[in-house]
Length: 238
Image 1 (cartoon, rainbow, N blue to C red):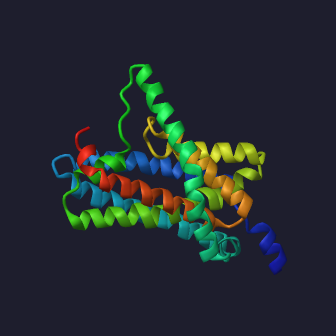
Image 2 (tube, rainbow, N blue to C red):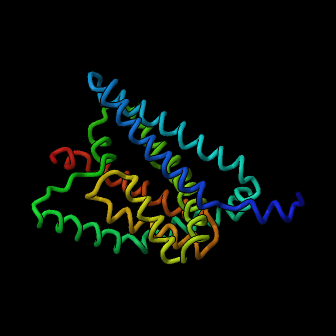
Image 3 (tube, rainbow, N blue to C red):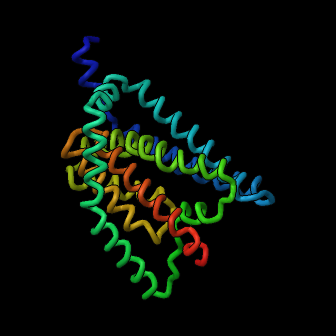
């Protein structure tokens, strides 16, 4: 097969995306089973360490698999201006903070209006309860470094482009953001995460540079983490 034909065929496939999404659903159920089965008698920090490492291995395996079957696509995906793209995404973040914050605030009060008590996202709970600096460092590394890179490669770098082969750009952004929000497993923050997914896909579509989305995602996780750490004592009261 000629190189040109390889390049034409080496692009995100919709069926592979469905397999990946299904795999993550099964993995999430299996991980929840392991937590209930083996970690109930132990402390929270052991569970966090296990979950972080296990999730890292699974996500890394998916990315390596995708790199293996779509080498030309991923080389072209990452072979952009990394520094410029990352900084652009990082500095775009303050522009989009108000709409995300407003939507999250409105959804919070909407749930309360219907008699539901919104629970904080699991990451907030974890940061406020962890005592070990070692475990805290691992959590910081995975949430601020690994998650932005891995999630952008999978959701915006692969799943979103594969959806565009079947649907319009608008619906592909909507659908990929919806799936992204569902995988955060908290209905009370789903609306805010959904909007974040829309913004990330939109940035990738407009800039054609995955590093812009990675930079934006990093900024979001970093500043949310910074806020939690600064307000740790107040958040412990909830």
